[in-house]
Structures are given as structure tokens and as C-alpha cells.
Length: 280
Image (cartoon, rainbow, N blue to C red; front, side, top):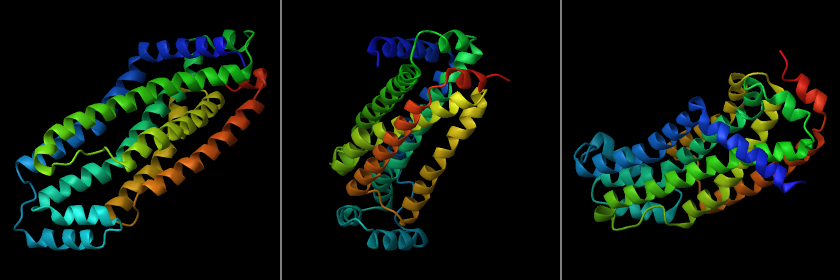
């Protein structure tokens, strides 16, 4: 393994990513809208204008029943203590429902960068010279993975920091609690998301090496968004709860899956097969 070559490939690909608007613009827009704009608007309008209201029994009864049966005792007690339904909804959404949204943004952004790895070389007419350069296939793949990992995690962490600051500035006068500064969110941001992003990137780099166009690579990689949609639905209905232990175990499973994919990549060392897979 040649660290200088891996770093050189990564730097080259990162520059290519940020030189293409079709790659980096969606990444920033998705993170801005889902991780910053949505929670900020929910926090501001939900608390300022009491959008749900406190007198609608048709809404109040099912929400209170949901809170009563909520699996996490700490969250259940906190929600029950809030004076209005709007307070309960805003707190629940920001601390509980935003978890799968951050997971979704990480998957989408890692999919965009990694799907562009090999097919991007093909579209720029640089694939042939890269494949037949004195670079091992292992170093080539590692460089591609690193090039996707750095910007994806950078955007995810930046979005989290901005969300943390903006949302807490809005909500602290009402809740007197610092949101997101707990074990659940720390495990999510510093354990699950990095491992999930790495898994998605390795998988998409392998897919990108097999398909011929950027659109094909995105279609295959987009399948990983479906489990996150399932988590959103499950959490909204109260069927599934992403506790710290659950998130930790998800990270362990993803770590094992990463090791399997890395082993698969090390066996993928046929330059001619890799080149032929990119030819129409």
C-alpha cells in the first residue's frame, strides 16, 4: 500500500468533485434543506406560533396515547412534562425524528461522490491512463474511497454543527435543554454515520467500477436509501426506537460489513476486466 499514491488519487478526485456542479451542488442543497432548514423551521414556527394548538382533542388524544406507550422512559417523561402539544411535537421531532434524516443525508451525499468515482473518470476520458498507470488496484480503490469519505463526512459534520447551534438558539429559551448533546446523537455522529458512509462508499465504488454511466451508478446506490425510509416510518409510528444501544449495534454490523467489502475489493485486481466493464 502506497500512502502517497492513495493521497494523490484522493486529492485529484476531490478537486474533480468540487469542479462539477452536478456533483457538489446537490450535496450542499440536500444537507442545507434536510439537516438545517427543516429542523430550524420546525423549531421556530412550532414554538413561536403554537401551530398544533392545545384545544384540539382529536389531535391531543392520539398524541398523548403515543407518548404514554413510548418505549423510552426518559423521553416519555420529558414529553409528558411539556405544557402544549406544539412543545411535545417540536421536541420529539428534533431529538428523535431527525436521526434518520441525518442518516439519509449521509447516504445520499456519499452515494453522489462515490458513484462518480470510476464513471467520472470515464466521462472525463482519463480512465484508460489511470488504469494502466503503475498503480495497484488496491491503492486505486482506497484513493477513490478516501476521496468520497472526506467531503461526505465534512458536510455531515458541518451540517450537524450548524444545526446544533441554530436549533439550540431557538429552542433553549423554551425547553431549557441543550438538544443533540447526548449519548444517542454522539453515537450517531461519531460512530454510526462514519461507518455507514464508509460502507456506502465502498459499495458504490465497486458498483461504479462495474457500470458505464453516472446515472446507472446512482440508481444502484440509491437502493440504500430505502431502509432509512423504513426507519422514518417505523419511528413516526412508534414501532421502532433508535436507542444508543441500537445505534451502537447497527454500527457493529456495518463495521463487519465493511470488513467483508474491503476483502472483496482486495480481490478485485484485474485491470483488463475493470477497463472492459467501462466500455460501451
